Amino acid sequence: PRGQMFRSRLARALSTTGGLALGLGFSALVVSEAQAQAKPKPPPPPTPSEEVAAVAIPEPLADAEAIVAEIASEPLTVVEAIMAEIASLRVLASSTDAGTRWRTNGCRTGPLVLVGTGGGSDSVYAYRVAPDHASIMPVGIALKVGTNPSFIAQAKSGGVVYVASEGCVTAVAVEPHEPALRLLGDAQASEGAGTSHCSLDAGGLHVLAANYIGGSVCVLPIEEDGSVGAAIDSKHHAGAGTFLDRQEAAHPHSIRVDPWGGTWAFVPDLGLDTLFVYAYNSIQGVLAGTNSDTRHWRAPKGAGPRHIAFSPLSRPEHLVYALNEMHGTVSVLSHNDSSGALTEKQTVSLLPPDVNTTRQGHTGSAEIAMHPSGKFVYASNRQNHSISVMSVSESTGLLTLHANVPSGGKTPRHFQISPAGDYLIVGNQSSNNIATFTIDKNSGLLSEPTITAMPQSPRCICILDDADAPLKL
Image 1: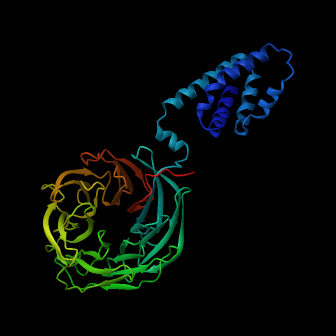
Image 2: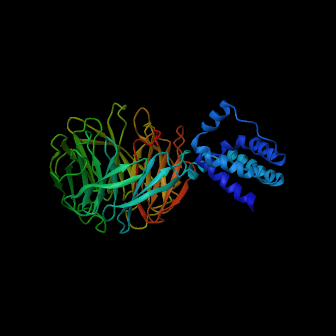
Image 3: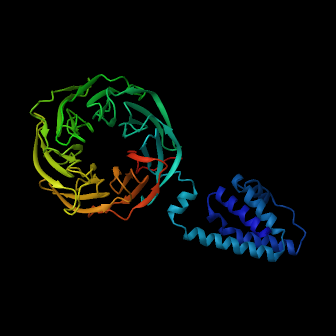
């Protein structure tokens, strides 16, 4: 029992002084002390150098030194048993993988991931990505921001994110090293109900929000302290689509400003089967255009455009990849920077032909994202709980479907790819879990996922942009 007590105390001392590697020199020290105790000898008077050495013992080692002295007072057989325990600890330390050591150390380093939740929830949760980028762990305390936080967008300067929740947009300050989340200013009305998406313009001066139920989009200024100001412009859509169970009215599902010049705002409207293109003044935060403008792209009836992705800046031809939720397709559209007009080049199915829809004209595709390399496009499908992996033609930008990978749960509503493109995190809405995949950068294919349970239904994922930079502690 005393050996076990000493083992426990020694392990604690070692952990506070920098790890089990400190124990490498304890064996000789303890045995030497024990032998000295077994055969007492008159201690010689200390030399000046020994006195200095005694004083110079680092303070963090004081507890470990005390434990060694106490162990040394035990009979030699007890000391030998304790040394065997120390040896086993050294073996354990040398065989433990980096992920285990990271978790033991409290998950203090690595990329921070924020998850907004739905189903009546009002909280944003924080997670940390493991060193191998294959799993995540919960950290910090969840922050209440408003009912059903549906989307999270990060500020260009870092340290602040913007959360779209029911009828409003809220700024949240993020301290990634703690980690800690806190509200920054007041929530601001988004000029409509069912706020489903938000994003920032190219200069980081404004937040743009889409209201699925309200049939509108709006622009809100970002104040000097990072908080959100009252909306300064909005656009309202009107009409109906083909399938009245989903398209009984206008349903703008997202809004994004083009990355090439920052002068066009794209709004996929699921209810009206239209990808609206508004001229955008990023200095004033003003949207220009009408519902009938010819530059808008009219999708096939019942397609239900939901989200979009852009081709990388390196591609000469500027392409918009529009995910059509209800048809389960992606349409590749060429963008004219001068007029804003979109021209369809290709539409590709996201699902195998043997997948049957649960109701007429609805496959439930949800999110689309371009890999940072520009070589792959990914999309999530709630119909068969999968992630579609597509390759991008280097010459034309057209897509080829390569695989449908199980999402690791049910109803993959949203996912995000890390800034370096080495992992992908999916929020599975109906199974209340998060799946983390590593990405093969050569083929684009996904690994087997690591699953993390959530206390609420995940609706959106936000990997902070400094994800691959080391954190200072």
